[in-house]
Length: 294
Image 1 (tube, rainbow, N blue to C red):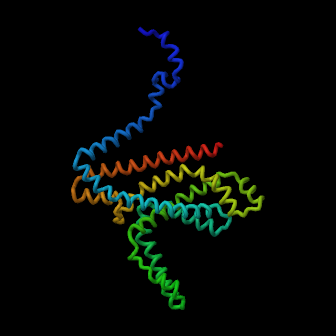
Image 2: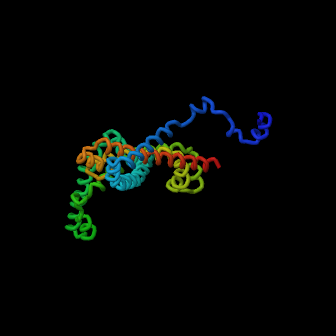
Image 3: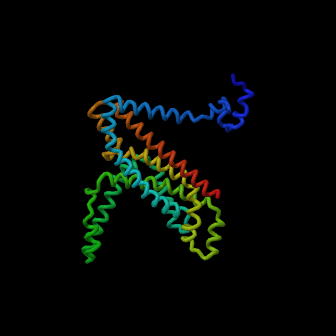
């Protein structure tokens, strides 16, 4: 029979992490929430594969997945541009730019998102297009037929609800991203700007090559979290009859009366996407931190 004394050399050769006992502290530190999410995903996958009702609901609802991702990605790309411009305006020394950016941010943040989606998609955007159409007619009458005809062809009724949804989400989230950009830029020491200007850079060059790259590392977690929030809030565009996964799930539940299957699949689809994006954001954050420490 092998004794503990005979096993001692082998135990000494093993890494300590392989032989340390499972203590109460380790059990407390274990990420049980990940295990719970895994059980939810595994249980849903089992239902989809084994239950015809859940499988039919999944096949029907996943048709809107491409619309959801397209709207979220397109709106976030536009919101990044709007947020950067508004964020720069918020810290600008020009009073017109600063007050215009502040007005935009405060108005958007002071109105519920659902109301903003209705207003931008059904009031503001059509009014803007009709205004451009009238401007095109006026330019044509003044003899500027080129730009006049181009603007005169605009028609608010021809703008799809998908485009309106992207406009509504991007304008709304542009205000939220503006505060992230403002905070990230102001987190960089002012001496960086002064040093860049002393080397002959313009303010724009210093912002582009010196300030923004440093601020981006600070802003990365917040920018990633805002994209996840936009993905979830994109479900609100279903009120515009956009056929995203939320709207498709509502249609399926309405004609089949299988509310449990439809909304279970819908919730798990959103949960899966947000969990994957959260893991990606954490990975990018670690990489950005490792590059910054070099």
